[in-house]
Image 1 (cartoon, rainbow, N blue to C red):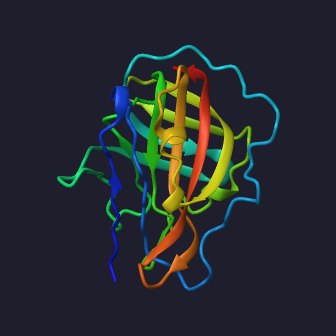
Image 2: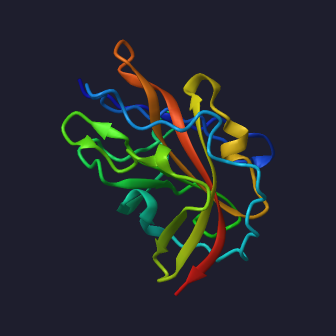
Length: 208
């Protein structure tokens, strides 16, 4: 019952990187991962001012204190079928970064992926992603020794069939981050969750 899914990278206008995400993992019998509150967690207050962009550097570790994430990052590209490569289900505590897009701290959306659970491990690295709230920090350690510090601006849960490709992967003037996993109800026929959970953030500073 091993299941993997692709994140397809179609051609995009004006050279914008646009990906339709469809992360698929093992469903657990205990009812699935925590969801996002109805209406999301964006709120109506203005987003924090973005910090100045950083030079490109590969991420090596991601830390999200609010949900207990402290995980290594691997840089992955595309599969032969045009889908984004993902960490192996044998490594449920590993996250991946799409190396064909923005690096964390560069202008544009830096995209990170993580499994929500597996039958072997139970909860995986992004199991609690739906619990993130506006204002939470995401700290991405980079190969150059600097840490890009992001602040979450919103979290949403969406049907995979209605994935907001432009909102997630569309070009942004400021450095941003996107964290993605599966969520919602598990479909035993398709052997995947029906929704995606997506956290959005903006760069607010750096250290190192």
